[in-house]
Length: 260
Image (cartoon, rainbow, N blue to C red):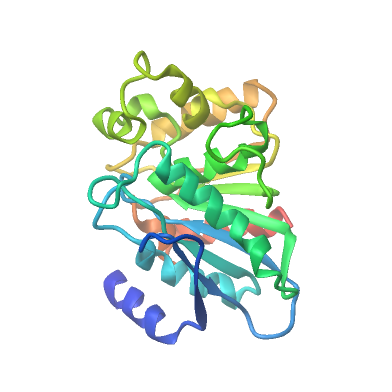
């Protein structure tokens, strides 16, 4: 079965409920939950796609289904992207923060908000790494003062260094590092070291979309700053970490299990 068919199958078979955390059509999140009363640990899942269309949370549904099978609730987040959605700075960041904090609004006793993991793929990895450090953002910054803090973060082929993505970073943040240095200081994972929570990174060594070297440099710099970072480099390409059939996802599960 191709990965596209697995997405379609996961869409048809998943037990999920849709929730709105704002008025914009992209301000929605799907809650996938295991059977039983819980309380279940929660994975906040953030899709990638260079912060722009056509990618949506749909591509993360096979991963969410796998997480549910392992006893973890999955909160699959949509957010405003660049272009017609009106995303960028600060809207994309506001959305991810609001989506995470909306978990508190659910008042769902089946969710253990003391065991929250952020999981992001590609550009969503940058957003997950950013969100993991929200409690250290300056007052008034997008996403500051989180209501639902994360206990750990997992980047899957993540963008760890905004200087490596060129025009896409400029589009997201509204300029280059010299133009809007405060935005880069808040949003660029390489400038937010170390995070106070454990960081896992699974980055296939054959990734031709986001170079594994960015993750290597991030991990080395974070460890030098005293951070708890694990980097695993399985075989495979950029999409492998969100495909539950792959060695890359098995490596991600091993990190998640080992961190419990």
